[in-house]
Image (cartoon, rainbow, N blue to C red):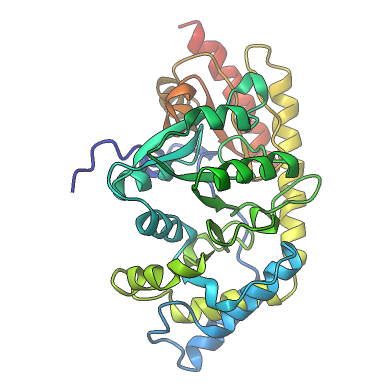
Length: 382
């Protein structure tokens, strides 16, 4: 398979940072998109119990029924929708569900619209599925707002699907209910499938998340993507799910059967505990992220050479730094010991932005962002 054009990986910077740490350099990690909190103890214990009871073998490729029923109840609470467990497919991480959604809907040459900036795997998955990536450019001057009029201009007779992500990686913006309804109306009128990646839906600093699943008459064209990695600090557990249009369920299950077989058995049991057990850990984590966000924002506001849109969700800030982001990210890591991701990883129009993840301690956020401001001044004056 041709891998050219599949884009960058955040793990490239991580590997370099780890190598510098092995040489004795202290690195502040503000690059990887994962909570720095420990998985809650009740979830860990649920996995232990499942293993001790022998729940360590293959499961139904669609996901165990108990988990799919729990996910169904979760949608009723958080998205106000009654969803049959028969439409839910459990996967090893949400990323697999995004890929499956594209593989069952996109034919070679079909166009798929995704946001620029946007999560770097979207473009890669579109290419893997045989589609043609079409970037929907979100303007920083417009607060990275998802403008439905801009979307309309991108749609052609070859457009097959649209990928949404909100709260958004890397900008931290979200989509309000009115705009989301308009976007879905456009998709419906043009016969597009919509893949709505809502993995950060519980990490919102004000207001309430309004889901694409909550809009009427979307069940025949909407793939809802969610998972446990961000909300429950379970990135390494690799557990996610999709709510799939009925006609595609068995296609997705066949793909899973013939690729990864099933999600890990005892992790599925832990996932049940995650969504049925106490939720206080989620609130604690989100409150901590908001405090950290405020620390970073206050420092960046004092730097006139940096501009940014204040995030309302997720745990990223995507500031404009006015220099080549790839060169600056490597300079920042080598000379100041701070790891961030170049904006170029997230789209062609973002080459002068960087992504800062505030999934780190308040102390490290304060020190790391202060170093970023200092490093930028020195970088520009070299």
